[in-house]
Length: 261
Image 1 (tube, helix red, strand yellow):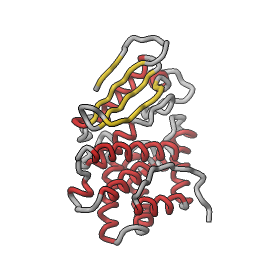
Image 2 (cartoon, one colour; image 1 turned 135 degrees about the vertical axis):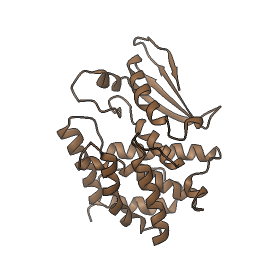
Image 3 (cartoon, helix red, strand yellow; image 1 turned 30 degrees about the vertical axis):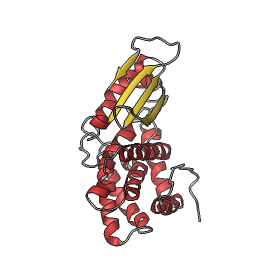
Image 4 (spheres, helix red, strand yellow; image 1 turned 90 degrees about the vertical axis):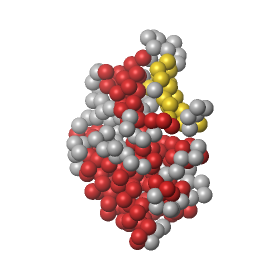
């Protein structure tokens, strides 16, 4: 059997359902091809930044990190609050939503969130059957599709899980990986600001559950923070629980020392 040449490095911990599902996903050439086809449109044909398997893996890991920090602070995810399932099921939701949220690029960038839920539907039927009965699978699938479509700012997240995926999508932004698409090789505020983000650190906050620190090489990075990260945080449902601090580190020009959301 052909195995995907991709190490997802998802910290599964003691989540047995997630372990089974990720094992099945790693053996799926279908998912691998959707990631490659998404980048055929985004990178090869539109000459914009990565929306394929690397982005998918990064978003899944960040979404899972956010979810765990928020639930550790006492917040209840929808899988627990609304469906009387477990935190492990909520982890399945954010990880799979993160991995599949951008596969709609395989059809077109325009309306890609809508296309993603269409393509993800059949994939989820196969994956979720490995760990859930038919009724549970429908519940988990519905919440994953909700999280996928809500990564786009045209839709409002109605669950903790969806909010985590939406914000995680914006945080794949280190040096040239910014989520505001920039044309590769073209000098613009998009490309310059994309290269200005040196690092993004996610940790437990002091006054709020999650603190996100954006380390910039210069003040151009403010464009990414204000235009994208702020936009994704707004109406995510998590505004009260997350702080974003952007600061400049190093010897490059310093128009702005620190910027807080």
